[in-house]
Amino acid sequence: MLNLLQTLTHLFTPQSSNNYKAKTLHVSSLSVFMIIIMFSQILLSFFARAIPGVLGVNSSINSEELVNLTNQKRQENGLPALTLNQSLVEAASQKAADMIAKNYWAHTSPDGTSPWSFFKNVGYRYLYAGENLARDFMDSPSVVNAWMNSSTHRDNLLSSRYRELGIAVIHGTFQGQETTLVVEMFGTQVANIVPVVKQGQISQSAEAVLAEINEVNLLPEKPSFAPLAFISTFQLTKAVSIGLTLVLLSAIIVDSIIITKKKIVRLSGKGLAHLVLLGILLVLLLVIQPGLIL
Amino acid sequence: MKTKLISSYLILGLILICLSLIYILYPGFRLLTAVLIGLSYFIWGLLIHRQEHTLHLPIVLEYFSLSLLTVIILIFLSLRA
Image 1 (cartoon, chains in turn brown, purple):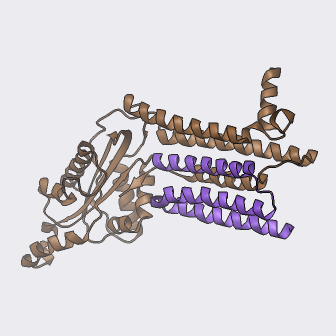
Image 2 (cartoon, chains in turn yellow, cyan; image 1 turned 30 degrees about the horizontal axis):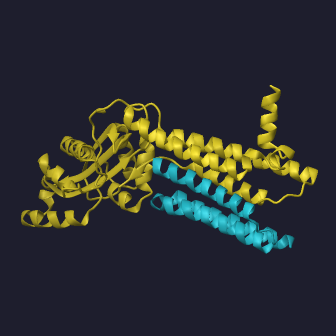
């Protein structure tokens, strides 16, 4: 017990044993923290590959909620709701499966397969088409909010050109990590427009319009193809980082108070500046959320 | 002297807040912003101690270590996000 107390005071308070500076703030300790972080990240990556299904993103995203949220955003902006089209759902599922099989994160696959190929594969004859992608998000609102915060994705989500959508949500191992992949596809079938547009103009305009659109949403309806991860590597990294930052902040505060109180003169960096840096780091750690969109 | 120090802290705070906003609002620039946060803090430390004629190797190493630790934490988190 006494040893523990001595160790703690050595680590957190300035005294003769640590040259009047909390040991936690010594360059040697900071270097150890860096090594621990780097080593733990290497271990995380190793375990994510060695034991798939344990580490990754444990998300609650589901396609039904995404459809509802998409339509909610559209209605808030005075646009008609999109109807769920099973062909688009199938196309979205195929796109997600293709990304996983070929291990790529892009609208166009490495072999040049465009998103529009998936529309054609399922026999969806489109006049307008679009795609949005998302990965690593924890819940459906986060996905839709991220799309709404990106101008190109928002344009897709709130486009008056689209009548239908299809969504696929797939949980599985992607690029070596357990994650949730979301594909949302928007479209308007040629048949939907025929009554109001001259027949001859449709087929000519379709490819041209398509070439202008580079946003595609893919959200597979199919259930996960791999078990859900129950430990998120992101949350784990975040927790460790927050813990370390709090330890450093505590050490700086205790160290600064004692130094000021005892009027100890020493050669050291500015405690207040360290507090500002670590305070901002803590805020960033608390604010940052997982998820990528494309 | 005190006013100078206060303004130095205000500049540091302003720079770090601006970079933090970029870090949060533009996920595509997270890695670059993380490096800039660490770099700006390190340079600020060097300048302020040079001004006070207290720029010695242990202090340089202290700012370097803390900056590098911050950058490493932010980069790893960005890669996991």
